[in-house]
Image 1 (cartoon, rainbow, N blue to C red):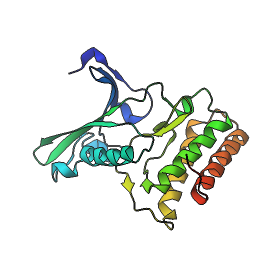
Image 2: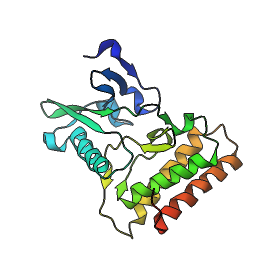
Image 3: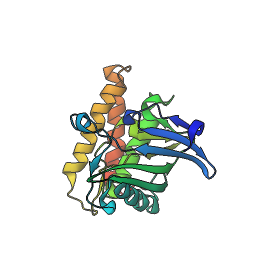
Length: 212
């Protein structure tokens, strides 16, 4: 459909995301693809139980809710699902965040201000009840002084509660593993210092009344 106007996104996504230049502006098209052992059976098809329950429609609704709350996420444009008998394929179309770079590729990745900002942003999402099940370095984008989260497939928006520490801890542990993998060019000491900066900013927002 877009031909030469589509260009593959290099970072993350198992080769399933594309930058698109449309008449309405710059967009990102992301196809839903399986990982792990499930991909050996079918890398793109899922069991169909109704269009409203497809992964694309679910993520579209979640993105709409987050965007309406003013959280730093890309604006959703369209949810796509194509049925094939008992299975379906899906994709989502979102606005591209101009000038954004994944955290590990940002030129200031070794600077404390950036990790402080990332910690503040994650805390903000958690206060709103967002359980990001795939919180990794490549799903954190930096554009100017702003930090965005992306890729909300299978994510859950919980009610705002004070005691929901378990899923928050899982999010942070997953991010920590990603930092160790994607920021491996840093020394262990530097990486540990920056992670501590992130956590300090995170807990400052989680415990106090800090407003981003």
